[in-house]
Amino acid sequence: QKEVEQDPGPLSVPEGAIVSLNCTYSNSAFQYFMWYRQYSRKGPELLMYTYSSGNKEDGRFTAQVDKSSKYISLFIRDSQPSDSATYLCAMRKEGTYKYIFGTGTRLKVLA
Amino acid sequence: IAGITQAPTSQILAAGRRMTLRCTQDMRHNAMYWYRQDLGLGLRLIHYSNTAGTTGKGEVPDGYSVSRANTDDFPLTLASAVPSQTSVYFCASSATGTDTQYFGPGTRLTVL
Figure 1: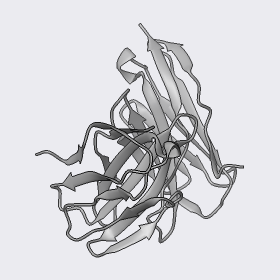
Figure 2 (figure 1 turned 30 degrees about the vertical axis):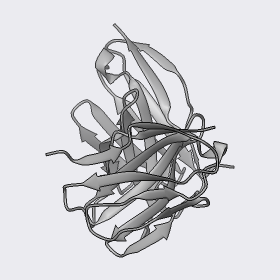
Figure 3 (figure 1 turned 60 degrees about the vertical axis):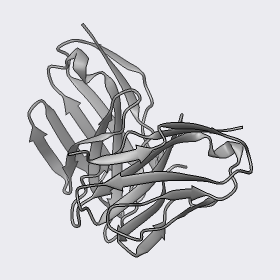
């Protein structure tokens, strides 16, 4: 079993929809959580990071962490065609530089 | 400001050959990382360095070596390439105490 599971998609939604992207993890030692966006043939770029259970909002993006369920989510409001990309979750344990990434979910926002 | 540069952009390599992928950053970040990205497997950490002079093994280090002689450069060497090392390789860096990794544009490597 992988330490981090993420549905690969693709996920297709109409423009303006609310998108929910999710990752589950098996090791409760993970304490730090990130979401990256990766456009085709580009390197990933950080969207959000969060360290505690609960919600963190940044513009149209909300990151949610539920440590008791070992489940993290990224919500995108008012989705745009420019949001079409692969979204990767990442996490690490306290005191390490070893990041574990999910496999990524490919999102298509249709105009 | 260039950020992170990687070279070459792409390479086709015969099995058994030695290859060094180059990575340079101009942000004076202490931490640097090498990942490989494969379809269905996502990004996997090969090696990392939290400061010049030190390196550590990631999730998939076998067949790869790294060095960190200075802050800016973090080359990845495949001593004797094998077809299973066909992948897209990304270098990244981050400032000490942050989780914001900045990724390079990647190197597409094909080993035949």
